[in-house]
Image (tube, rainbow, N blue to C red):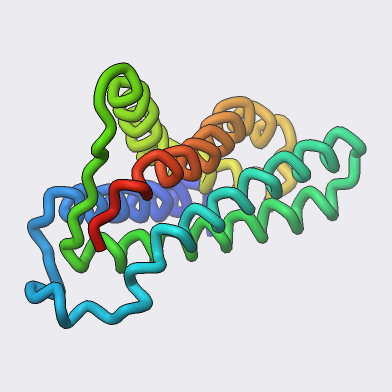
Length: 179
């Protein structure tokens, strides 16, 4: 597969995921209009997502450690594992939000401002990071090391921030869950 086709596929996937997430956040799609029909396991998905994000944060830090030690094989395995977990997170996130379950932060005062700053930066950077990670993976798997390094300078800190803030957002909002 040539680079141009791969770039088109990555762009297409990134746009598709962004559109799906925007639709779900706007609550246009609701596959369970009656809350009583939502399977019980769906209500545990936010906690699962936080666990996945926390695990990804640790794996990303380990990945950095191993690449600094020049252990490319372990670095690659950790990144592939992190990518798979992040993909599972995305599926879980989509399932949860497709139910139409509403979540609202109930904090007041300065903590509310902090929460929304973290949430908004998390959402914006989560939208940006997917194509960056995919392009980073492409260059890394093709052993185009210099191009990979240039991309990772951006994708790595953003991906790490998104995984960490995913956990923070969950910890801040979970006391206000009404389900």
